[in-house]
Each structure stands twice: as C-alpha cells, then as structure tokens.
Length: 507
Image (cartoon, rainbow, N blue to C red; front, side, top):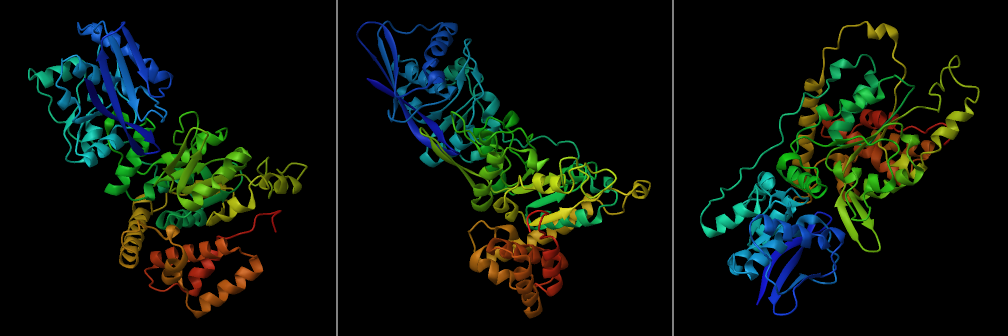
C-alpha cells in the first residue's frame, strides 16, 4: 500500500503541489528517497530516523521507498521532513492514512522530534485553503498560517504532539493570527533643519510613490531625509500586507510568524551583488528589490554599487516584478518598489565648493556621475540637489511641521488617487500615480492648454525621452493632488519639470 502526504515546493511566492508517496514493501531493509531531492532533502532520512528513535519508534525492517512526485521537479529545502515522516507513520499504521492525506504539511524535524521553523508557511497555507485541505506546520509559525483564512491548521511543537492529536489524547488548538509587534517610533521630519526643497520633494515622492534621487555633499542630510520617508507613508493595506508577508515568509524573514504592517524599508550596503539586489542564488531566493515590495529601497552612495547590480534594477523598476532566470529555475517575485537613492556629486563630495574640491574638479564629477547609466537615471522621477546645511540653520529651533502633518497630507493625496483609479480601472491594482501609464495616465494627468504648451517646449529643450515626458506628467498629477486640484495646471508642470534635471557631464 502507498501512503500519500501532500506538501509544496516553491516557485517565487507561488506553490507547486508535491505528493510525497511512501511505500513499505518486503525486501532487504533500505530507505530510498527518489524524486530529484537536493542535499537538504536527501538528509531528511537521517533526521526522520533519529526523530522516530526519540519517540520510541523503529523503522520497519523492510524496503522503504519515498517518492517525491512529480519526479522531474527539483525538490529543495528542509520542509520535506514532516511530510516524509507523516507518510511513514501512515504506512506503518501509526496514523490513519486518509487523515494524513487531508493535510498539506511542512516542517523541519529535530533529532528529538521537535519541529523547527521553515520558509514559506503563509503561501503554503493559502495553497492548502485553495485545495480544500488543512495545514500542518511548526508551532511557532501557526500565527503566520492563521492569516490564510478558514483553513484547518495544526501547529504542534513536536511530532509527538501531532501523533497524540490524531490519536485523540491531546487537542491542538487553532493558532491565533498575530501582527508584528509595535516597533520603535520612526524618525521624525522635525529633526531635519533647513533643506526645505528636499523636504518638499520627499513629500511629493511619498504622495505619489515616485522614485527619488538626492545629490549633495557629505553631511548635507541625504541619508537622514531618506530615513524619514517611512514615517510619511501610510500603513500597508490588508492585501499589500498579505503579499509582502508572503515574500518575507518565502525568504524566511517573517519573525515569529507575525504579519507585517509597516511598509518595508530596505537599505543594502553598496557592496551588494546582483543576486542580493534582484534575487537569485542556487535556490533563486528573493532579493532586496522584492523584500522592499510595496515599500522603499534605499540605495546610499549610489555610484559605489556595482554597475551590473544597478543595471539589473532597470527591469524591476519598469515592470514591478523581478524575474530570475537560471538553468534550473525561472521564477518571478513581486517588486513594486519606491526607489530612493543618494549620492555625492563627485568622489570627494565637494564639486561645487572650490575651497574643498579636489584637484580633478570638475572632471571628477562627470566621471563619478557617469557610473549611473542614462536609462537608470531616466527611471527616477525626482532629482533633488541637497546643498550643505547652513550653520545658522542648525541653531534654529525645530520646525513646527513634522512627519505627522506631512503624513496627513500624503494620506489624503493617496486616498484621492486610490478612489480615482478604482473608478477608472477597477480591479487593476493601481493605487499611486507612479503606477499610471498609457491611456490611464493621459486621462488623469492631461494638463490644461498652458501647461501642455510648457511641457512641450521643455521636452524639446531638455531633450526628454518619452519615459521622462510621462514621468513629468505623473509627478505633476501628484502635485495637483497635494493642492486639491482636479486639473493639472501650468504651475504643477513647472514644479515637476524643476525636479527633472540633467546631471553634469550628461548634457
């Protein structure tokens, strides 16, 4: 007789159905695992054997064959331990095989029979719900699985507790969904003195979800401003929180099985490789651009990143998805991010100050800034110069307006955008002006006659590409929303164009 124990394999945040088939037959004692397992899956034989010994169970002295179907799909990860153990328990008559077959299971077994956390419990629970099955997962990840909805969830701390539940000697209660703990308060915009132009650009970027590049000398406050952007953004919606949490679950970064509520803010070091930024590696894991989905990816010291890593960001910025193609894997992760970058104008950082600039100025500025390609530069909506802070500004009292006041305006502008998109293109998932394109963009951001004339003239003089032209329209629409204006007027176009600058050495 063959016992079946359903589980899943992961392709991005999508789950593929895997049928763990266990057969115990007469023959020389052996424990064979087939179905294209990787090293971690192949080692599950020893973990299962040790866990059974800890429970006082011995594998039957027969030929045990475990097949992971479909056999042509590579199986990766330690989460196959639990379904293999359950399949064996069903084949040995310890558990009813029909009950084992009614649950999708995943979990890593300890040598003492305990269940350790694994990646991907939340998407697995959603898959189980769609298949009409229950879910068995490690106890610490029960709250994560509970967010999937009306699905039967068993979250034991050990294999023994699970056996006792099926035997009726112990009852496993349904886990309660949890949100992430209240984190420390976010940095406040009141801490930033001066830099009014940069603050305005930060508000516009937050209101429309626009990409932002800040250029200025060292110590001018670029990183400080970027760190205050999360405090201006609204919390994740229910759908966004579920999608973002699925990505973090697959990456094994969902702490304590708690659903995320704040928008991600990722700030990788400039030594990050291409797989670290866009995803990849042997198991095609999500990169920083996907872990920042529906949030902010902050790249400090932008020209110091590897050229190949920066160029790899171009496709996710345009499509909102990071596609990782490998010989043994082809997966896609959501990557709808808001890119915020900061850089010095040159390597020494003092290009505009003759008393501090190096002897190579101004040639060093053109060489340094040329590390950022034109196509990547073109995908950034707002370009802002952040000058050195005037010492007189540092002695002033904190500004009256902080993050709370700006966040209220941002929330109001985003509410207008969400309502507009729901009326025009319901069900398309558009929520910010930065996502508008094509006919939708022309419909919502078409300027008045004087504004269109200004934009046409500026596009010719500034040699804007078609992408740059449309990004100016998106920013102008956001400026109109912040002003409460139904129409994109000339002044909105003018301010949007002021954020669209040509870097030195690129004219």
